Image (cartoon, rainbow, N blue to C red; front, side, top):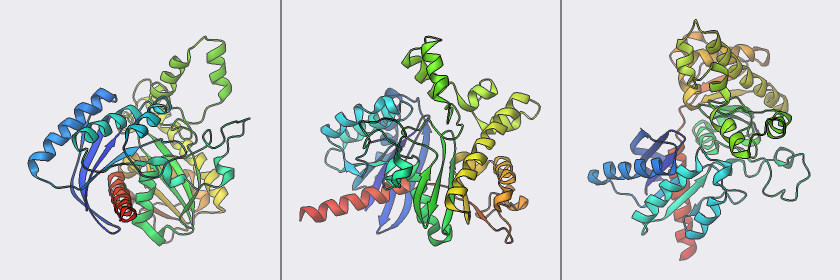
Length: 367
């Protein structure tokens, strides 16, 4: 089965056609293009993507989309008016991704209504987190909805499938990019994530703060008179690396500004947030066998990997500097107690596999 996939992010649209044969996934066509992080921007980008695909006469039998958040019902599912209505209620929980993802889905659903349009949710990877990792320690009348979820699940699923048994029994996967998170896996199953109810928490990110004292937010609401809308813009767009550096959100550009103390400070703060979270996850796992870097930053910025590894030396993390510079698949020396890997993630491949499995299962149930 050939599957057309769409992954609408906060600044780009990744799309492609993948051939799926059982569990094997092969990219036939894959591309990314920049877009405005709005519903209108995603609609324009999706129309342009379809215009570039259709003249090539590439065939596909299903369409798969990434959706970051779908609430407790996060198994792959078919697009429908009822589903659109449900997801619209969640848009404000993820304004950097949800409006764009929904716009891309609407565009393909309208144009290819005769094909199954399948949504694949980032949170599904963490669906069976232990109760201790899911619960929010607040008085809560909606425990099945208002809880910790975990995100970047499509990326983590790709890494898990790619590495298989070589993950070892105690692994930390670090998806480091504009959005950043980490997951702890025991025997291949997720037991903890740095993100929780929304993609705002955990590590310091490009424009999001990561974990922040809720008392600071209450102060801004009550003493500074900020509205909820102003507070959301602060947390989604004007925090994190951008706030610490004085306006720049891109770690690659900050690494080039070696004489800028604010750039150095933002880089250090980001790396420290990863180191602190990795220490906590390793303690939960009772040690560490494998550490995986993935995502745009994790895959491409060797200095960031080096700084993080130095901070985790007490856990047995070592880097081979030459292998690290050339972005090898394994960047740790053979003598390292912890195997450190770099995996180029492909969320769209995970989407293609999940969409194909869903369509085949749906067809079998219909017989």
